[in-house]
Length: 200
Ligand SMILES: Nc1ncnc2c1ncn2[C@@H]1O[C@H](COP(=O)(O)OP(=O)(O)O)[C@@H](O)[C@H]1O
Ligand SMILES: [Mg+2]
Image (tube, rainbow, N blue to C red; front, top):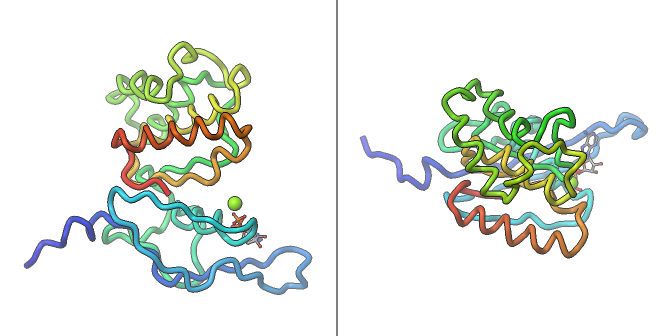
């Protein structure tokens, strides 16, 4: 038996994926969101998906995240077809979606709570708070944070699970231009720090 090359074992492969929706008010007709989408991403690659609003970017990320299923085709991570959400695929949306009743620290811990590993991994929480530059705000609630800070907390919540893939769906889209540029640099810095293999 020949061991598979490391790249194939850890890569993300999208094989001709098709996804349509049946939106209300469309007379029961289908709207094609994705058709024959195929690509592969190797470990360590950073890929940007660019296209006009409505071209299917979020749909594709939701399929990779396992939040929805394709009509046909498949998405494979290593040798495992994606059949549902997993902590190995972190997703950050345009809206940081922090729990408003939890502090920054508790929001970041939520990623560990969901995986039932809070007890053994609690020591990492401070490390990730530092990584995203939120020292001093660990005990603040989301409504005390700026948009950029809230997105950094959401990023830390995804990263603390050490995802193999980090899916970023326009996470900086709602920020002002200046903060967005600064945050783009920060996301790259975090990625280059080796925390996630393949931000998309
Ligand atoms: N849950 C849904 N129900 C119906 N139509 C949807 C749904 N999600 C996406 N769509 C449609 O699929 C197309 C692609 O949407 P989306 O992936 O959100 O695009 P993008 O992220 O590139 O702006 C759009 O025409 C959108 O209206
Ligand atoms: Mg979108």
